[in-house]
Length: 77
Image (cartoon, rainbow, N blue to C red; front, side, top):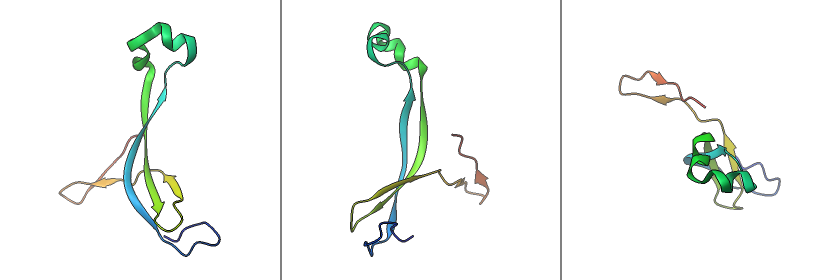
């Protein structure tokens, strides 16, 4: 796919799926909870695309993965 930067002639290339940690507690609440803070966190997966020409990065919903039988596996967000 073409890069969405107006002056860039580059192409966006997939860089793979990335997991981002979301949730949990920040600040003083997270400090007092220590390791227990991790229990309130989850991960959100996105497919990352990058442009090698200008360096722009875009995140998209992950595409379904196909198993060995050609059937699509659902990727839970």
